[in-house]
Length: 220
Length: 304
Image (tube, rainbow over all chains, first blue to last red; front, side, top):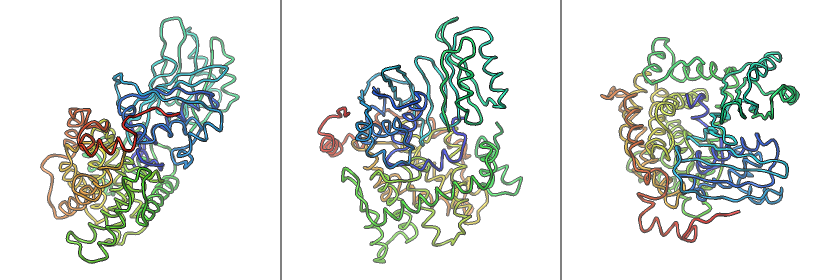
């Protein structure tokens, strides 16, 4: 099911004018910020389909920047997000694309700072509900509506079991899990939706397991 | 994950078999799926109701959008109602003015509650706060109105679409009007089956509605569709008439779930130009294009 809550339908409480183009866009930006773990220094935002055609009128641009600044959909500061970003030292650029995408409201957000960079693709499927469909080239499906951890690892036997065991030790239940890889034996990504927010210390413990490269999380 | 209903048929059957309101089935499902308490869920919906009322009151005082394209029509309509010259009935016009008020606040980048989307956020609260004057509901019944609307919207969102970009305006204002129609029926004491018929009658008359915002803004025709026949406004009118038809005992010949399926397929076959891309319909008229040029200086340029 794409929609799991009545509040996906009666809600969200948000700044207008468009749930797909404003609230959904803010949520995609905020998930990107969450996964990056801090405010990036720069952002290149590629917009596709209806996002590319109408982003200015719908405030899609200010909403995504607002999301990168960690603003919620109802945060009135979304209106001043451009100025706030400049004040916070975030440089950004919007690039409307003409390529056809599977979903009409698609954004690719590439963000980074001096240490690292990250690329994420999000789609806004209606009423402010979103899905993340790609992270650093890995296909995935993540709603952002549940807490989740994303584990980049080497594609080796036992890796998944080790992570699952660690979560079990802390009594953390896995609601949904997906593993994807670009090619066999190379880098892979685990996407684990869990029932509660996870502590930083548990993430650090997972990161110390063999063949684990990086652990990030989405809080709810 | 346990789901109490996947479609309207299951929703109505469950409500009737257990002798419960549709809103109650929605609350129970939300408790199951979110693992939250009834109190928490009700409190969140009460907050949404408060946001709706505040938005509508703000709009009735008069707002202007950033572009200046929309704003102030809700006030004009309220004044007209006060004059006593209204032809189509004061509750209907009240619903229209309150739906417009909400959408005007939305266009002005104010705070609203999406129902099911922001562009269609006027219909459910507009009708709710208008029929309130006739039915004198308790606060609990008003909150239930939102759960009933949500139950039907939930089916549409999962089995079809509530996105104008994916399914045209029929998926947004069409869904909103049908959701409101179903909720009015429950508030007026109708049966779950009557709610379902009201939903189907309402949505059937919104099928094919395109999404063609001028300059890509959720202003023209979105807001004025609140006040005139084409969409939001007919949304409000359509919802109330459909509710009255169902309460009168009139049924939909096409089952509700099949109407939702038809809406989905129409959305899929609708040309992209008519799905929120600002390339067709009213957006492509000489005046639509002129307004876009005036607001964006003739071309959509990057900012940053």
